[in-house]
Image 1 (spheres, rainbow, N blue to C red):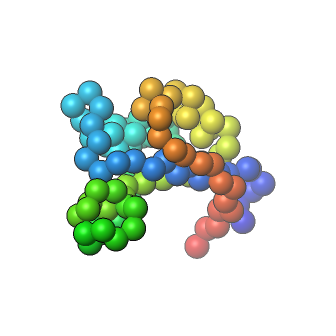
Image 2: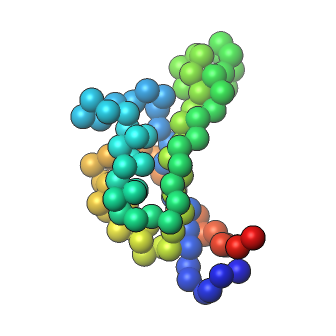
Length: 101
């Protein structure tokens, strides 16, 4: 494990094709993550779900998650600064361990 810093993972559940200010919400979150200098951030999209399968969104659309990892304090500042984008979206912070290969 690298150092003793408290690291966390932020996971935000998004709706497929959700827009904010005429841009994809996931893209806007990634842009803000880059500007904030987060250690890592990505967007994951599930494969399209078959008609009536699960609750991954509307039929034929997969779920979307924004995921970022950094020190707990850095993620707390990011969540506060991105409050306008996160409002109404479920998210969670989980403790994680960081390893170097």
